[in-house]
Amino acid sequence: MSYATATPADQDHLRTYVENLLERFWVYRESKENFGVAALAVFLGAVATALVSKDWPPTFAQTRPGLILATFTIVWLLVAVYVRYQLRKRRWAALRVSGCEWLLAEWLPDSPRAMANKGQAPPIVEPSALILVADVVWPMKGSVAVLNPSLHVYPNEIEQAWLWAQDRGTDALRHEYIIHLLGWLGYLAMVLRTVLA
Image 1: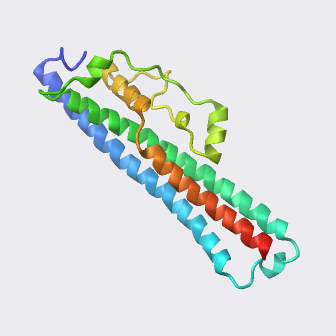
Image 2 (image 1 turned 90 degrees about the horizontal axis):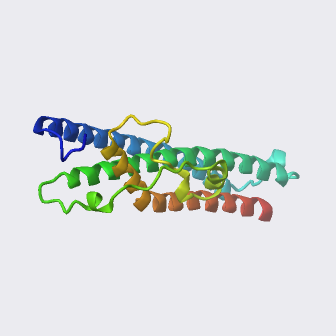
Image 3 (image 1 turned 45 degrees about the horizontal axis):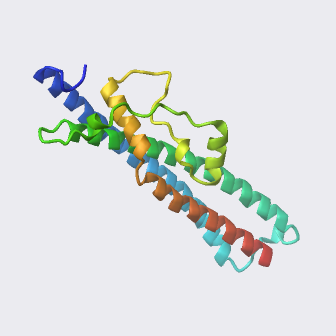
């Protein structure tokens, strides 16, 4: 059933459902961003503490700077994996929010019917393991799939809207670049502080 061919009662039901999805995914997106940024803030707090510390490296590691570098490398990798996970989930939710917004706009009486004029949405593409590993080093556009190809639980019109959102993207990826760059700069500052101490 599509919105255009549905009865008025079914149209109201579908519109309410998409509005509720939009609100749910918006809240989820915000929480994922908060978790990711909080983890990065803790990491950068540790980096800042080390950068302003008079006694660096610590006494127990003054003759072993490699220990500090190895520890901070492991910590940064753990933080990067966690932050990337949170921000990938944030982007997934942002794509779904975008699709819901576009679908609701499509159903307005004076809509230019932009989605309907596009035809069939692009296919579902799941990220490969290589993309997911590379995504830990630097955010990759292909690291987020808005739909699981083996699950079809939503009406086709909603899935098509999400696939079009994935195809055109959102500003969430640019935001991820900034967040991840801050983490890498903190890690680099820590390495330089340890090596030059």
